[in-house]
Image (cartoon, rainbow, N blue to C red; front, side):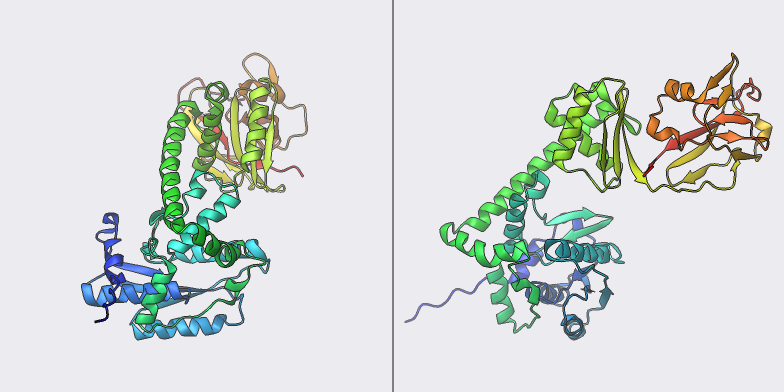
Length: 448
């Protein structure tokens, strides 16, 4: 009597068991449907969960990158599969720059994630599986990634106000293929997936990982274990960096002596945490950040080491570190300033506060002019007239910010105030109800 073949567990049970407690109460999700085998399997599983077990409602999004001559056919196939299952489908036509290799892959990924960010649903289901996870870990190893990068893809991630859920992350490609065959599913094949010359991920998938699995059968489990350890390490690093940042941060700036009192590795992580807190998405490379930190460590208090990286400027001035996005030159000021009226600019914010020594309270609503710097300007104070250069030095304003610091004048061109630094003694009031202009730089104007 022939031995009966053991029936593999139904992937539907695996899917339901992977539903995180953090998602309890979610009644609708949107599936990222590429049309490939993995996303078609997930579409089938989610619809079975909906129909057989009372799972959440399902909709789908397909991103048309326009990079393949088959792209329109893929849209038609996705529509057909969704119509068969009563799943609403959203098709997003993305404009992807016609670069090549890894840069093209990165641009396509950016377009997909923008489509996820634009979704009306708070929960996005992604069909990444265990083989994808192994490929991602190895890619990050080859690219010299840190703990976050080596943590690869989490099963659940909060991202831009959305929840990204990967229920198949512990399921291998062979298991998905067996399920697809059993369910008679069909799917599309992306012709670019066979390009091992231009895409490193494809090279790993087709030429490397198979050989590694022959030598190391538990490879995928070990890489998944590595990713989990790196995820734990990343949490601990981020926690320590946040604690250190709280000790050295002064508003939007960092205190240099407090920063340099930390061990060097913690200094680097504090800088990264600080930049992320400021929402500066174009971050320096680890090498550039390390070299700049060496300059900060060895510079005198009067020197001004700069790090310029794409749209970002890191600046040390005296005992402070500043991080500002670089703004293109040629920014125009509005026609006028109005006392008591806050104004936003591409590179800063003008705010008005009440306080002693400010401009007269009855000037509220008065229109003031912007004074263009020509050199030699002086502000009348109670004792003499102080040159602007001295005011900036006394106020700790870095030279890189002085040329675009606003100056307020009357119709005759008389200097009335240098925001945040001083008000003309000719007009300053003694009471506490005067108007003080305050200037907060949020960018540095490029002089190139």
